[in-house]
Image 1 (spheres, rainbow, N blue to C red):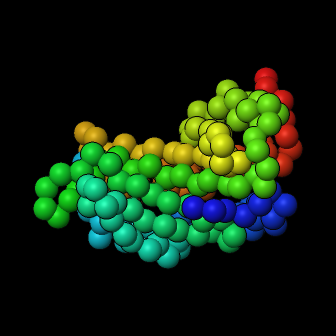
Image 2 (tube, helix red, strand yellow):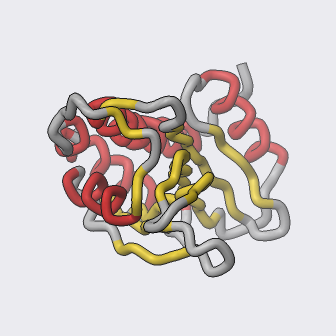
Image 3 (tube, rainbow, N blue to C red):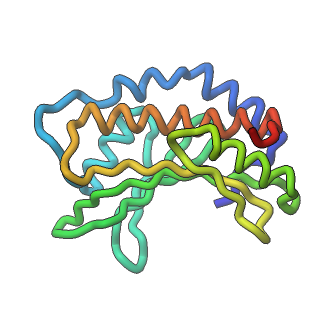
Length: 176
């Protein structure tokens, strides 16, 4: 899951902002039907409607759906969790992107991650020790049932989380 080095992030951030992620907001048609879980086919359709051209695979051990997507130079993945039935329908979606620092993580990287986590309601940043990587994730919970426009809105929020994370690392802001 190697991602671009930090030197390419300015261009990627500009691409994210330039896209405006308008496609995310208009991705799926609102539905009166509430979904409590999504199948691989539904996940693929949701991501495709958002303009992410997903590539679908399965988690080897559980056979749960996994999607990879790309926005500009940024690759990300979506893992479906809490799955049951046939075909598998999954209650939680975890979006995540990891980024190679090109060096070992420093105390400043931990401060930036903590600053992001202190200031963001949605999404969580992390450091992957020993791999010289940082990342961000975002969870969408379908438990109890949600409308399609709720799912679409959350996919749009993922774009905001990703953009805020990249911006925070570019600025190198200390903790608050």
